Image 1 (cartoon, one colour):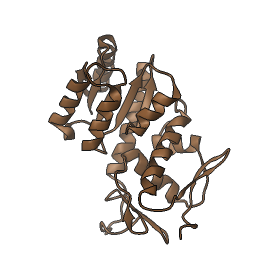
Image 2 (cartoon, rainbow, N blue to C red):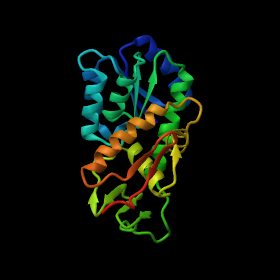
Image 3 (cartoon, rainbow, N blue to C red):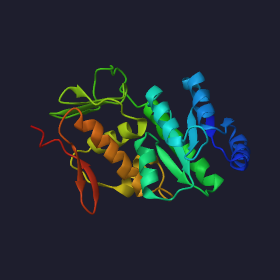
Length: 239
């Protein structure tokens, strides 16, 4: 794995370098937001993972994340932040980060999060398909909605839902392949983010919020909240 770590605390970077080496990963470290963005833009296809500090000189993590997402919806991003306020974490996720880790953190926790996110990203890139399956066949298809895991496209009443990040697509697919089934936040963390014990339910809520905004650009809302339980996909009310 090729990791780009944008982190202004050199001691944190030095500590993580040892853990990355232990995993056999290549890692590049940048200590300034603008320098980190430039490193990404030099070769966007090079990076398998970005870890991004929120507080950075020259350009903060929110701005870096926003600029990265203008170029790539697929590169996984984990936001690192010393702040423990819900608003900062949710804003980071809404900017396009796939996950966040709050400082101070255990290096093993960050490694586990990276592995989980990378694993889900790899599954998305190599989604299972039938032996003779063509690109125009859909894995989920209802009266109003359809998804293709091979092309990573989703449509509502034949209008494409644009700009879905890997996690947003996986979240939508998890819900849509079992219409009207209610999923708890804990279930979605396990199924979409691939971790049970150190997940934060706000990660799910932030992604649902962003996903709904993208769906509403093309049609009625199909992600429903079941209060006190979780979320479900239901397009039965679409006119």
